[in-house]
Length: 118
Image (tube, rainbow, N blue to C red; front, side, top):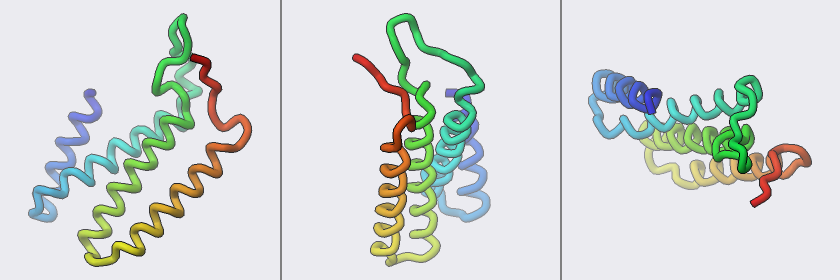
């Protein structure tokens, strides 16, 4: 929660003082929190096992964390691209579908994520 507070504060500085558009706080925050999720997913194995005695806790699977982190970065980036170059919805939809296809191909590889037994 502390990182999200820092990300929102930094987003206020970037969005308001650099562009005079207060609405850009949302995509800047999405990008910052998404990169945090990507870093936590990439270096998740270095933290060690944080699972409870009953099983795997949510957010400890690196593939899960990297998927949602990259999704946040993508949505924030597409939002900023749409602000910079408006009326390009087909290109943005194509970029999203390409990202989604690559993510599905990578996550369905054998051994890409931990098996969760309920």
